[in-house]
Length: 171
Image (cartoon, rainbow, N blue to C red; front, side):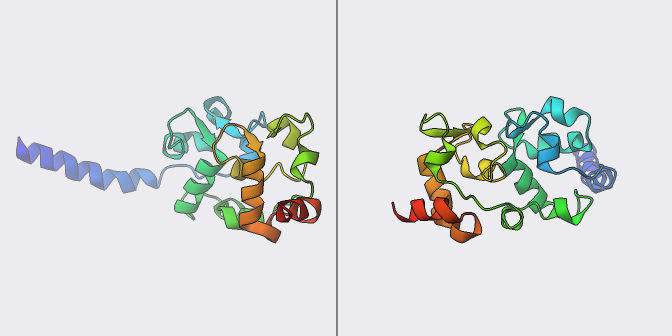
């Protein structure tokens, strides 16, 4: 019985690397996979793309969706093994924010409905949209003034300029 268990364990360990070579690489970035622009990649959105084979490994909180943070973390940890090109491979946060437009507007200017939060809809088509998944640290799909201020205070001129940077520094 012990020999059978040992043989099975060894076979499983040896087949994992072999199977890993047959997994399709991810050839799409987060934004192109998030078809409904809700800040998450659902199972439905992933179903017809090669990210499907990776879905259970990326969805670390097991909520059935992949957040931008989960996606970027997975890409960073698996650099070169799961991505087809350097743009996707460099999806880790610091590489990504260099590509984003800097946030220009203050929190108040972005909070169009004065609800005290910036929703995904309010962030859409604005300079904050690419930053949204990083700013929304509690993953409630909205950005509070605290999250906005903390993000800009932490990363400064790398992520913000003009009114956004000035307003936060004056607080």
